[in-house]
Image 1 (tube, rainbow, N blue to C red):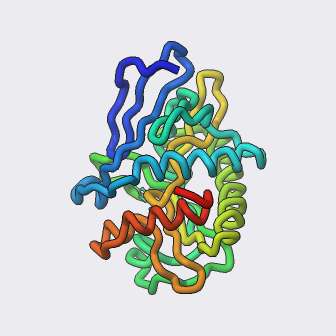
Image 2 (cartoon, rainbow, N blue to C red):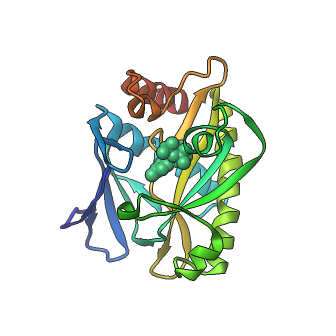
Length: 237
Ligand code: UDP
């Protein structure tokens, strides 16, 4: 598979065209950003880890019946995926209180919920990705009701599956963000990435943070945390 012209550069990935109009190549960078791009840095080795971890999880989700954009891992940093138009909704699920939930509602981090929460942010950097509800998303024509229902169904399946995969390796899935896209044929598929950049992952025993909060909160040890998740998930680096 040949990389042609660059189509897009985001905060953590670049996207390239290929000879096939329905296939693009994503290339993961080591760049890290937080707080809507206000904080910038590098987590060495992150690109390769996020690429391989995302692909490992997407393959397992696909096998369990969740349609994804994944096609083929090309090398450490690059993967061929179906070309989709991204639905501009960040889909966030929480199993345990943390981050903006704890801040917004004035509660401690670490409260285990009886049921997962489900929310959307409007994916719009200029507006700072504001919280949005389904009726607002419909009013703005960001997706149809059928698409939103499907996204909800897939997302809850992903939560159950991911929680299980991670529990096997001693990690609690605190919260995470998903993005969905629409293929040329109109199919809704899971897109973007599933990595310590987009999930909060806590060691089940020590509650040590194994995710991007180490970078966001200047805790140090981000590289080691990403490597630790990778080692537990894939048994190697
Ligand atoms: N998240 C993300 N990208 C974003 C915002 C959030 O991947 O632009 C992830 C984040 O890593 C966490 C979950 O979504 O796992 C919930 O994030 P939260 O709303 O608590 O926001 P944050 O505290 O990250 O600003």
